[in-house]
Length: 112
Length: 117
Image (cartoon, rainbow over all chains, first blue to last red):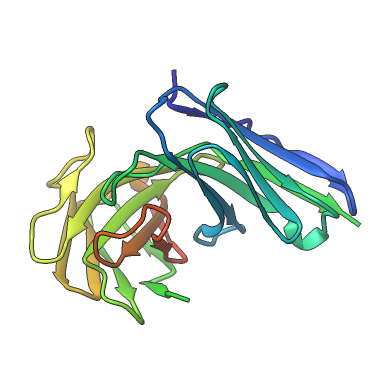
């Protein structure tokens, strides 16, 4: 079993839709939860991060962490064609030198 | 924001040759750099972690003698794929972190696409 599971999609939605992206994980010791956006043939860029449980909002993006269920989500409101990319979840233990464990990434396509 | 560059962005080499990929932190000093490998439609897999001035720490299953990593300065790390074969064709991405940073303060380069013919 992989430490982090993420449905690779692809997910296709119309412009303006609310998008829900999810990951599950097995290691209850993970403390930091990140979402990265990766455009085709580019490196990942950090979208949001959350420490421990709870919600965090940044513009059209909301990240949720439910540690009891080992489940994290990223919601994108009013999706735009420019949001079309692969979204990767990543998580790690507490402490500066722990490596990031990535999900497989979900490919999202937002069509006009 | 922190910027990490990689060079080259795309390289094609013949089987049996070696290729070097550079990773530079442009506006900060990276005490730690990471090298990842990404196959099409798959996630990033950490290959190794390097700290400036010391030997790299390789992940299980990664051949040290094949993937040579050098982190000679606080702004430059190199990955050399030695005796490359077609199965080494992949997207290689580096990331860099300044100091004993918070985990998410890891900045990624744009990646290098390696094709071995």
